[in-house]
Length: 136
Image (tube, rainbow, N blue to C red; front, side, top):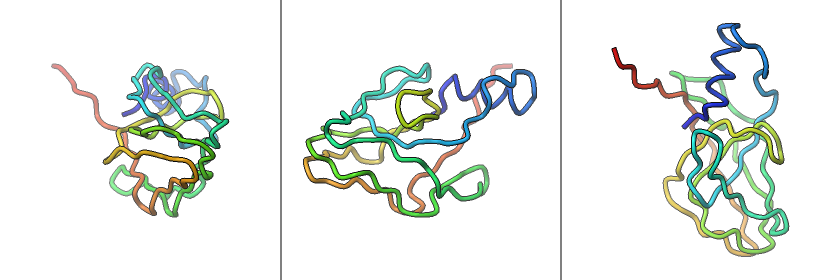
């Protein structure tokens, strides 16, 4: 899913109708134990005190048929305490706080215990913009 913030940012910049905010220069992958909402709310990331931090995406490939995927493995730092059950991935424009850009449910929830390293296999993160439903 794409947040309303990011959809407005993309459309305004592509069609040059609203150039602020600009498109993000960097994107950060995060994890959530709750379902985010398109308005940017509902994200519950693990605590930094548990060894969690977002990961900058530096290895995304070129789009193929409108889909961008990771060209290499993505690895989070090792957890120093339980992160709970992770149900969603989230993309932000900042390593902390920032604006929610995109999110989706994981294909399978993951329980992250102490001393766990969460990894995303090459090609497993697939990002696309879905066409909204148009009513005539």
